[in-house]
Amino acid sequence: MRAKGKKVGVIKPWVYRPFPTEQIIKATENLKALAVLDRACSVGAPYGPLCSDVIAALYREDIKLNLFNVIYGLGGRDIRPTDLEAIFNESLEVAKTGVIKEPVKFVGVRE
Image (cartoon, rainbow, N blue to C red; front, top):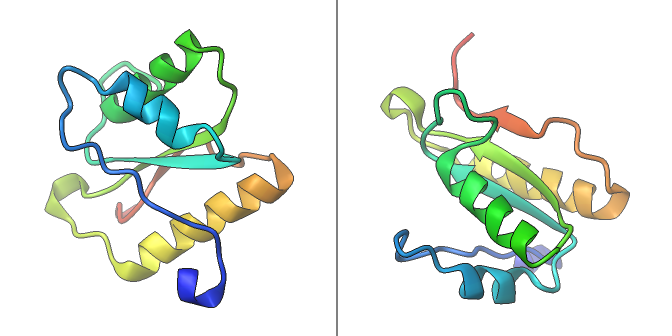
């Protein structure tokens, strides 16, 4: 997508605990939108576990960012390159408009 001139990137935390709050804040400081990809749901929580922790880290620093959660891989399903491209395109649309259509989106789930 960068070869097509789109400003997109990936932040990949290598350690989950202790949560890398400072690194997440630094990595997101110039973003207009962020899609947080989770491979699990949190029962009773509005977001997946990684997204909840990212939101908490940003909230503590009073950072307001257009952020939405994408949950993928449920039931052992793979995420396809076309799914990732759609997520990146949705992030670009959110960055441009500031409108989040679905705060939590499930990818690859059969209905």
